[in-house]
Length: 181
Image 1 (tube, one colour):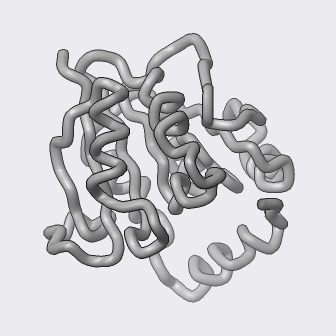
Image 2: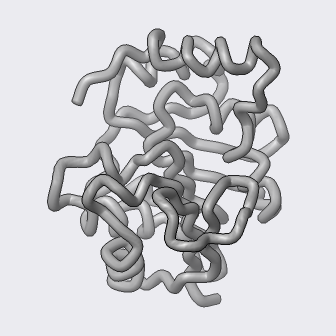
């Protein structure tokens, strides 16, 4: 899938201009107080830029050059890496790895296990993998939990929203998995 980064970002710009809070994911991440974050599937950098603004060391990775062009223009000091998340190996770990914005749903069908393994490689002992995505598009709770388990991560929390509302088997979930210390 190819994106138009400017068009994608303009939707969030319009929401922000109307007074809507577009930083729920960043607030969620900040509640865990990480010093370092990998924004895996960062898109135009909306979340990573906000995390950087809040003083967190962040690196963004995305496979789409159009999305990264917008991110680089908006925050040139943040490291933006053009790479597929499947097989990702940056040679370092982060206290929290984030996949916001339905990232597992935009990878080619059948590659979700490799996607989770690629990002989980960057979660150290005591670290977290946080992901939020729709559950009504063929990739659900059981599959995702199994892929996390295969990557050495255990479920810690599951929410219905980025504002930590209780999960009750709805159409969207925010997952928090961790690696044992």
